[in-house]
Image 1: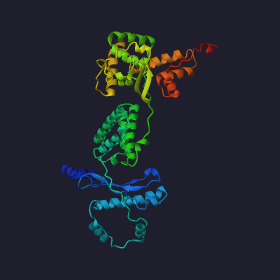
Image 2 (image 1 turned 135 degrees about the horizontal axis):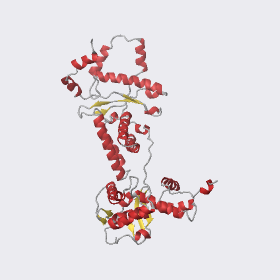
Image 3 (image 1 turned 45 degrees about the horizontal axis):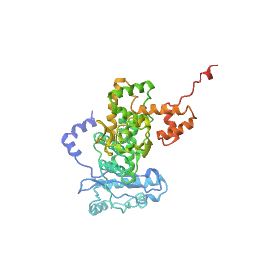
Image 4 (image 1 turned 90 degrees about the vertical axis):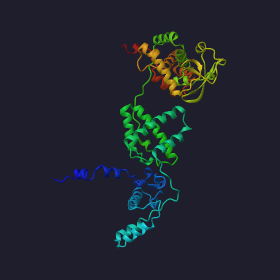
Length: 440
């Protein structure tokens, strides 16, 4: 029995033929229709790329508009552009080259068309005129690697160093994955929604919904920069849904745990203890403490300035409880880091995220492991612990709203709504005992 699959594999699948065929680079990309996501106020067109004989790179050719944008319905525009796309693909396959003079090919083609056309074909030729091409200069289609580099460059001035490093790391992982999973991809136009969805599903399988969402956000931000600068037609990642994820939070320490930890650090690591007191007494986040320089502390006026999560520069008072634990800073260089691995004040040339990771690992080694604390306890837990303690003291002598108003000035939350959400998240608000109400 004749088997077509076996025949093809045996007779036409030899190594020499395959290598010869696969080594050839495509001269052009298949023409595609740009429909502006159905927006009729924009100009729809057919676009394609052709390999430049001098550079060897695929370059974007002039968009084919023709009469498509005279029509006011999606169906009519798609009908016209579909004809353009089919005819353009046919011409390209016949050998028409936008970088060369095609007169000879054109005349040869016309000679073949000397046979009489049917009335139907004549009508079709009249209705769909030869495409009119845009008079703009040719726009080169760059590789997806170069396009993403440009996108990252566009974002650099608008984001912090920490965010930039996050973008760089996630983008690097995405590009490595594309090279491995889609080795035939070359241009930025080869990156599509299905490809990004496959990658995000890969991240989800390897890590968590939250990390997958973070990848989606960073890649979408870069793609939006490419759309805004007319390198791609649209940012399709915006259409990829965000998955629901349950955020992890650090637990608060009990009074006994906090006291035991402080006593332990007083004997074993006073630098780490002071680091924690900035979190506990001044309610700074760990990364904000890592960012501090000696000059950020104004001891005379009991003020501290720092870059906060929700503000480029925030000023707080330094409470006496923290002031009495500070060493003499007057002889230190104000431009140096306040906290370093070797102690207070000094040069520490390292990325901010690395500094935070260093103190997190140091805390694990010095505190978490000896006290056998779980993964839900960390440096951030001290901020939760002391904000909870402060709120419960404030609410004893005032209404909850008055207590929150005072607390908001101390913690630095940007709004009452943000503070209330934070207090709910850390379970800082407890009702009075309601036993009497349910006794009956």
